[in-house]
Image (cartoon, rainbow, N blue to C red; front, side, top):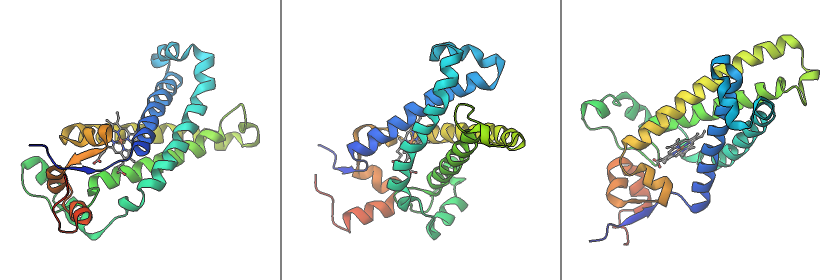
Length: 209
Ligand code: HEM
């Protein structure tokens, strides 16, 4: 029997998401190559050190702009609600196997990751522009640039950690990656993981096949 499917992401939303991921990987590789001599070998993946230095800021800006589209698409669904505090309070049960309170389209963990993405990308953009030698650095005091370099590295570290948590959770929750690949989830998946969203979509009526 064919499972009833519910739409979770449109084609445009999925393309947007995977374009952000591609930029994240490329900006990450070029950024790590510039970060420490031990990782300099990564610059050969971008066509050498000159290309690494040229491409890294443009890849970062592309990631920011593409994420901005995601931000406006998903910010509403990531606003903190009182059921999220309850969910977070019992998140330990996810590991011990207990029952967690019902979640909306996104649970509290996903919402926190969303806001960490947003904040770290803003810090990366603002600090990165301030020491971009080719364009703006000439008009920024050197003391400010030095602090910006430090904040840039911290924000990149936080973003990478958040992406690891995000990707791990996506793979751990069976059916979630399918949502971002095909755009749909089964009605059972929606009911099990995001009951309040399922109720919102179906308004108490059984979903059509
Ligand atoms: C290899 C890395 C990644 C994987 C495997 C992945 C996977 C996924 C999956 C499966 C979902 C759907 C979750 C659901 O519907 O419950 C999702 C949603 C999302 N992803 Fe990713 N993702 C990755 C990297 C990223 C990056 C780098 C960003 C942005 C910096 C990002 C931003 C988002 C956002 C904003 C959503 C919508 C959920 C929300 O608003 O909380 N993802 N991702």
